[in-house]
Image (cartoon, rainbow, N blue to C red; front, side, top):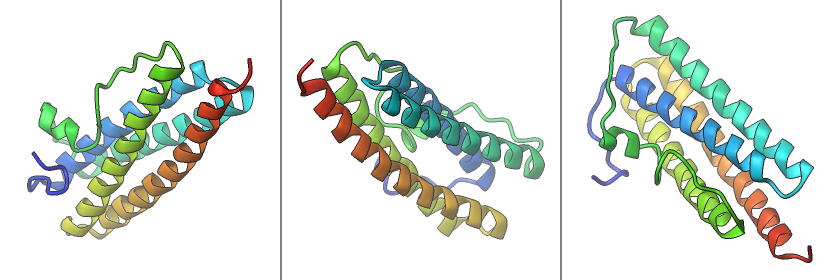
Length: 160
């Protein structure tokens, strides 16, 4: 499946998929925080994890409020609309940390694109605004993560 053209789906399923993606992102940022080379990087990753957790909770509240009877089991294809690579990260050394950061950068791009497309497809004005906001926040997370990735890489490759 090409992630640039996700299948037609209802806004309830889009909320469920988004919530899944945000939970994965929050988890990944916590893993990065645990393995960050400096205290400043640890705090930056923890802040991003908190933001992703807030996004997940926001989407889940909307799902319960607007679609109380929604009940989804997401397929691997659904999950791939918002996540690149495995959900669980193996971060043991600078090389695996860099690979996980790269996967997460790709995930931020994919998720932001998903939200943008959903904002254009849903007819519900409130959800359009939420999806647009999350698309914009995904772009901002990508920028922040890219800067952090460069710093972390320099820290790992610098003198010890």
